[in-house]
Length: 268
Image (cartoon, rainbow, N blue to C red; front, side, top):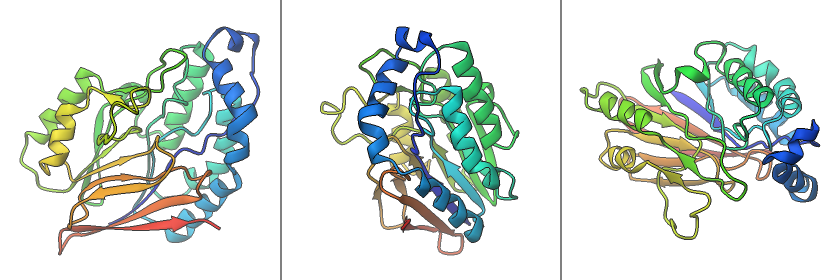
């Protein structure tokens, strides 16, 4: 079983309507205009797509932040790059990041939900979350943690219904590996320093991860890749930002040895 995991491409652009200056989008547009566009190379996302198509994993997982402010034009830009992957026979799983579900403006929410369907190849919609899917003998638990928030917050929220869904699932006999897919890290080493960026409501699900009822957490949000794992490869993998650091994760599960191995992919 091979998984390729990428995240946080952050395609951006200008404000697409005057209402952007009345909601949080102006913060994201300003950030993109003066900082993010100099740090993120969208050409690396193209290279990531080419690598995935050449490698042909059992599943490609994207953990969000395809855009900078969740505007329709930004989704259109990244959609064009990802189209060959979406049209391939490689299964895909996607959850939105906080920059994808950035504001409650109707056209932005609609664009996010359309991108969600596109990335998950029409298999399920955003409103179907949380959901569990089995691919190649592995159970993937897909949860949304991203909701529009105030101007200064980049926090995520694992709402009670999602946490309870995961708890119920994990209360059943474990017959195959379980991997939870979300945008935010479950493991937070610096909760006070990252109070504006952390995930809330995750404690019960984090305990399931630490107790090995969940084998892996795949996440993004943090732009530097990392792994917090034990000797069997179980724990949490953060893919980092594919466009800022040119990195992805390639994860193999050996059923006979019952271990996960991680290889970091660096895109030239």
